[in-house]
Image (cartoon, rainbow over all chains, first blue to last red; front, top):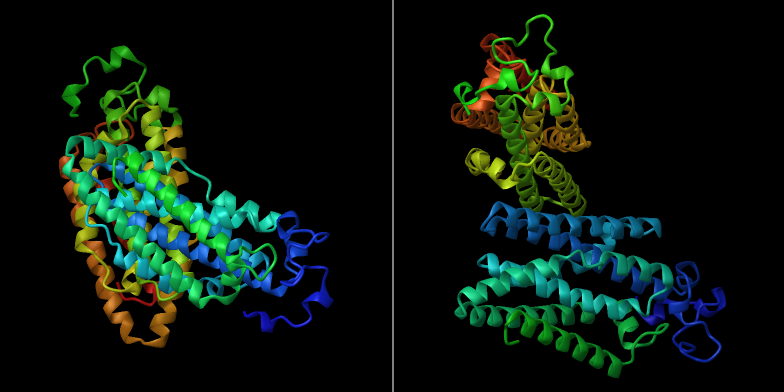
Length: 257
Length: 257
């Protein structure tokens, strides 16, 4: 939805519009609940996009983790990856149920993001167990960083849900431990996995750009123009923070990012 | 473990042995709790086998359902298969936790059954969505029939767990509905799926025989010789009942078994 699609917003509701966002005396979205914030149709459309993107991301992550479980060297490792996959599925359920609760058809909300996620996963099919672990860790961390940044700008109800489904379930610790042990055992493994992590980051950025170019409401929320959306400079800073966090995580893993 | 491996059982505990099983005045296993029943080391070994077989079966089913989810024609269908997979994973968790609770290493208990399940799944890789659904339905139903038969002979605690993890979660209804709709739309589909179901049944029987031949304690419990185990005639009847139930289910699906 573009801004020309939202006739009568200002008259219909006390919601702030692009014009009044951030001005003194207007309650910022982050201090409102969903019922109040959603009276702005563009804010509503952006949140539906966000929930749809998150939901399909969880479903795709479920599928990929379950597939990577086949690469596990032991039954215990397989069970651990299956557990991660199952946790992602339950996150998917919460997001899907929320979409239904606010009167949106979940499948319709997810469809626009299928190509980007499927493209990412197709381009980054792990060739072994360690690549799968690095992918689970890196992918999860970048997605989590990004959605946390966005969450701060959301209405209270949506924020609570987004933070809940990003809740760390101890998966990172598992991946880090296994990857470090493998590098300790054979330092050459580190070089290969560092290249792999760089490829993952590149592919994630390229697919995100594709989404941003396609989804007006979501991008407008990110780059400003609705509610407490970022301005362009702040989007740049956000990407720096995410890249920096990625670099630190890779260093902690023993990989040069 | 064979019966010659259980020295001193009768002296150690009030547990019945093969010799006294079924005689008047002895409490049958089905009326005892785990603590009492497990004092017979051969009964204990048989239950560890059973839980290990069930646990790996659930983990393998998780993996295959998650993989079949990729074949789903719609996002809603994909979500439904992911839900089944996730339910199997939670069953796995309960069985694994139970093995740990009774002091068994879960991986060790599962290992003996990996080859049979993996063999079954490798031989019955669905080539499309409908074959995947029929497999989920047939495989689940046969396994469920078999474990229900066995459950009746188990101690009260083990029985409760086995029945809980076999609890129908509505998956059968989903598969039946989709398969019938496909046959209605194109009756030729029925012939192909009937052949497929027959292959599934054949492969399941062949892998079961492999397990029975390999696992002394489990087989002894099934064919008699420990506690309330079946005699050979009863095993024959059990297989008839399972085959008959399969035939009825196939007919209900619109498939000649």
